[in-house]
Image 1 (cartoon, rainbow, N blue to C red):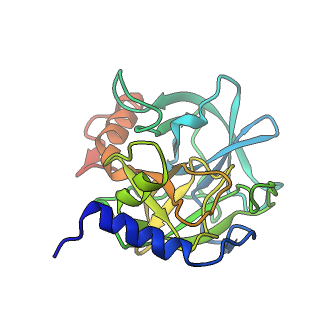
Image 2: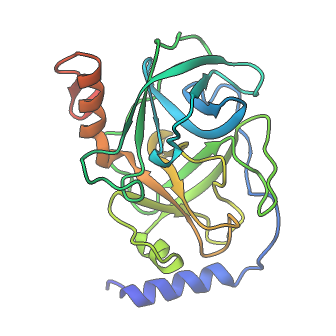
Length: 260
């Protein structure tokens, strides 16, 4: 028998808050060195803005709220902040449509001013072919703070394991509408979460496939009952592929929603 919305929310809150509310680092550990050759860092001069994902040698996928009017640099191939390939931005394409919202459509494409050089440390990641279901185990990674509310930024990317929840969980936690363009994902007991500086980074699910873009959540981060919200890349495949094709002067660049 299907549980009512109110009962599901009650059960979630009960499970979440029976555990102690602990102040600790945001759960996770240093990502394996060879696990993120497609992970990008977005900088304004020496200030870390966001993370992103290299989906072709010329394009990075990130969050629309990472947009600034300054001079964004994209760093690739880094496992520490002192060793990377740096490229400048040619074009920024924010969310699809004239009336898109950087809340519900928090996604952006960045065209690099020159193609990234593919090496053992720099490669692309494939787009998803479908959306992962509720209950899927995932990993979120990024260069954001590892402590909250005080902020401590690491010199290497961190990874943490979380799970996709029903969107009703995030609707109960926040005053925002959680749309079908979004994943609600986190850890029931708190203590594991993305946080400031992780925006635009990847949510990897199932067998490690790219599924989401880090978008928003509560602060302090990693609180019981307050999962993070991630943009569903699967809902934007047509826009991603069409945008890339139109801005690289190619036709037929997409097959089944995947950029070739």
